[in-house]
Length: 424
Image (cartoon, rainbow, N blue to C red; front, top):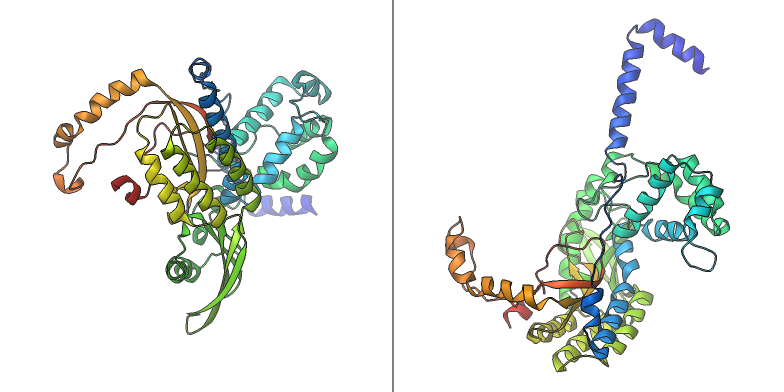
């Protein structure tokens, strides 16, 4: 059958070979742009010496806030894609021993009969997924796929000490891992354009009508019920049937109705999203509070705990006011639903949390810059209409990161994001 089809094409079009070569080249080019980076750089945090200079109390505070932050790693994954958690689990199993420790790489490579190149491709892909927490780049939002071919990757899976548990996940995920079609799904973004997001899930929200409903009507309903959408996700069950999921340990539900295109629609307001992760985070924060340096750190943690328990973002803002008042801490930290870059509409925030040690020498140099900021602003190449009416001098610190739960560590951050704690 296939031979006959080829003959027929050749007889009709003498340029068949050229067309097929072009199509093959186009497919390869399309695939190659999404291949995982080759020999990605690995950077050490080099924070050991600074950590040694902390007191035991400061070390324990740093440790427990770090635990609280990483308790929410799977929250980040669930905000990006539906497959992220299973992909992460699959790779962790494949490259682990049956006792959970790191696998003997040399033995696994030998048992899988993997070439040097294939082994490098497999481990580089794995490192990039673990580093981003997902198989999308945290800076750029584009998907990446392994350079190693699927059969060679499967040989590594089957040779793993955890092959029994890793193999079913491989079978479930391998087509997804290598898929580059449709091209729209190679990007995190607006589901209305076919892009991927897990802030809006269930029956896909792909119509302009859904977008309008979520951004206008559901937003207003949330505000009416004094709910900040920063820590929420939206699930669509059917036409005109939605659930607003609020991240919290406390669980409750409320059904409300609203008008949509002249007929009745329903919205379930449901607390309890990410309950297991937030429960672990709260336990670690409670331990961290025992080692806080001052009342502002204690009060900030109290606000975070109340917010994660109840889902009330205002409690986090209240805690952030105390965070702002904690001037010049030795150990810097922040945690919660902070940045809104991943949400295509910039309303819902990604989980993150970090601990860092202040580099006092470098911070003092930047403090000089901050003191001169009001003068330097007048030299910038735009008019005063583009500046705030009153410049408020920030507390600028240079940090040496100890732990940062995120898909990508930024070069710098400006927190808190909400204006009230900063202006207060």
